[in-house]
Length: 64
Image 1 (cartoon, one colour):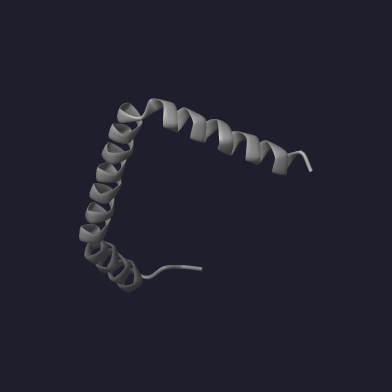
Image 2 (cartoon, rainbow, N blue to C red):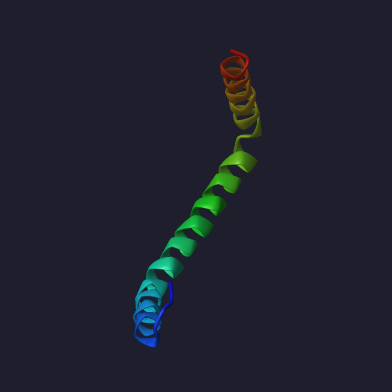
């Protein structure tokens, strides 16, 4: 399958139009990561118990 120059130009335009969306998505992920890290720092015990519970459940499901 060969790609002609017009198809390449069209694809480049599509990617260029999506760049603002990608930047916004990246910023949303960075913000979410900051929120998660601050929650974990504020509630380490809760997070540890939650991780143990999730690990136990996943272990039980995987052992079947």
